[in-house]
Length: 470
Ligand code: URP
Ligand code: ZN
Ligand code: ZN
Image 1 (cartoon, rainbow, N blue to C red):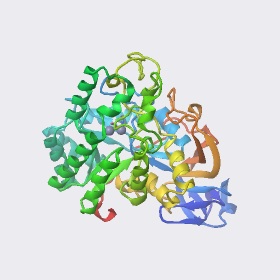
Image 2: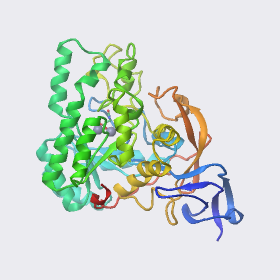
Image 3: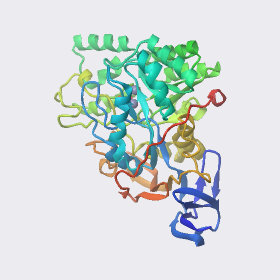
Image 4: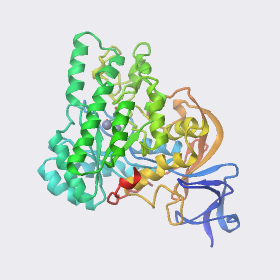
């Protein structure tokens, strides 16, 4: 067999195994896994002393969206996907965001056009803020056929949140059509009531965001989302779980055999509410919803990753710059916490942070790392086996890691369009030194070489039965 490229001499890592093999690539796909392939290749990439992992799948990131308050994200599909490859990610699943009264089809078409600049492959979740009878009865069934099989709804946020009744209708459709409802679990009335109370008391600094979006607010909504899924007989995935107490609700439901999946994110392992209490307006950089909790909570989230409560680890990249008219500080550096855009960036830092503190510091195995950052997202969202593993026939999406490389995270190396990273100055051990998408090197030694627009849309299959996973 003659290969276009062979990745030679590395340790191949999948969610199941680690083994020594060369990876032979033809036409962007993995054609052979065996030793001694380098002699039959047009191009050889030396992976001696390196780990060869499936490229990461970031199943929760926001690009080129507008916040509910009308602030634009700093990253579009070009800067966002360039940043993704710099951190070893080769597939993203961002959101096409419906606006009130807008036909879903218009939102999908608009986001498909925005995504034409992407440098890596992408699928889409749909954000539904107005799941009316037309959306549920007509629009969704035809979009599902076209490969949009996961839908996010919000239980909080002024212009986004939907009622329990609407969630039930959507879950009912999801059960019939074998799709997945993703839930942003925070109690809207609690957030609103707490916010008004805090503002009336003059408690306006960034740190009060953590109070207005406190732990019980997330726990109640998580419990309710699970109960709604039970009522509707549907599978559900709770996104960006931050609180150990919300996680316990999920674990308890999983133990009862309820098909509840869950995702967590770097901000809940590496940031804490103390960051929102940094001097001046600095705390604004760490505001996201749900917020990072007290430091002790981080260990609970690690336990959830270790014990399988969480199936997915995503960035929830929601990039609002710090400075400038479109940034977190657009209302001035004394703006009240509820006027600061919610979200932190993380496309490039998601994998190195978890690899370093998880794999290198002995909290999780390499297999678990691959599972929650690539294989599970591919399986859950209907992209497997094309994406998410290293197997003959799969797309040659690879991240070649130097497991011992020590790197200090600095904003300049992340290739996004942000003016800060919440992880500035953190030291990590292990870095993806080469990223390949469909057999092409798209980033090497920090240089992004991918051509604008080379990414392709990935239609997602219907969702599998998840009970067996729990
Ligand atoms: O604060 C966050 N997470 N912003 C992004 C939107 C969302 O809720 O995922
Ligand atoms: Zn959310
Ligand atoms: Zn999000």
